[in-house]
Every structure is written in C-alpha cells, then in structure tokens.
Image (cartoon, rainbow, N blue to C red):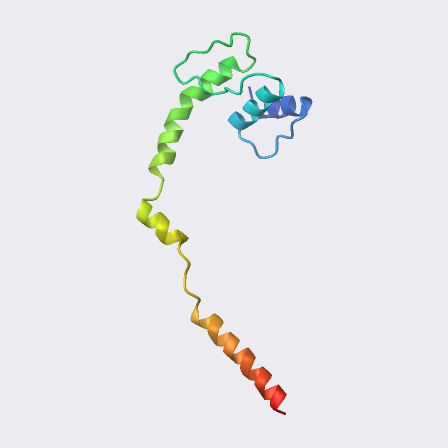
Length: 112
C-alpha cells in the first residue's frame, strides 16, 4: 500500500499522520482499530493474523527491516566519542571580552 493510501486510512480512523514513517503510522492505525501493533515484525515470514489488511505489505517491510537496523548500529559513535560530545565546552574568549567592555562602559557613565 502506498503512503498516500495509508495516510488517508489514518485520517479516516481519526489519526493525524504528521511525520510518522510507514511502520509507525500502520502500527498506530492497528492500535486505533483494536488490533495488535505488529506491522513489519514478522521477520521470519510467519504470522497468524490471516485476515490482516496489512499482511502482504507487512512481510515486504519486515524483510527489509533487518538490513536497515544493521546500518543504524554500525553508524553509532564509539563510547569515548559520545562522552566528548556531551561534555560542556569552555566559554569562548570573545564572550568574556565583550562582558568586560560592557562593565567598563557602565563605570565611566556612573563616574561622571
């Protein structure tokens, strides 16, 4: 099923599609309709939901899913780099010098 059709289906059941990807949107629709939110989880090709509207698309999407997960895992930063990016950086010298100038101007005005 194409995304336009899925978005229309979502709106018909009272869901705002917003920025959800296909899997997230279909799972939200499944929950809204009182079904299991299992879309694209049948990675082994087995599913007992024979009357599911999403069945064919589910298998296709599920077979693509493991390859994308492997790419995402390999793109993670090493732990040492993650720590470095979250540490606070020291204030730049430019900011400190502008503060000094502002305070010196106040002193000259008050002295007069």
